[in-house]
Length: 148
Image 1 (cartoon, one colour):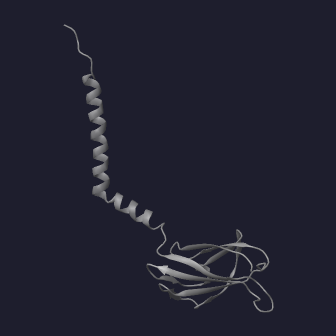
Image 2: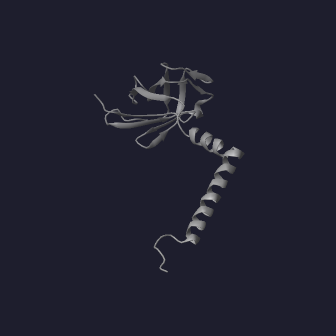
Image 3: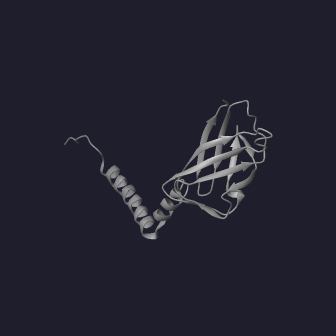
């Protein structure tokens, strides 16, 4: 008697055992709540709201002895900040210290409201710049600025 071609019984049993183990692991993770924690940590890495840089003033003594960045919360939720250290500003990949926030902390930057960030570093008013602002709750904004 001649055997017909196909998958052997041993191969089918091994495949079914592997699928059974994978299914058991999946059921364990769902039952223990591990997947909920995984989704929670993934969502915490996304920004709570969107910011936009709506204004930039470079250092220009005597009119503007300090540079400043004006940002706007374009939603969907407000951003709470407790102190100056909640905000970081980079001009051309160089971090500038934040000297002052208006409105001052602690405060909430509500949707459609603006925050003026005064910097304590020199920013050349005659050259173009890339501005990056990082705030609380993983918020961020990027913009380019050119003189004139």
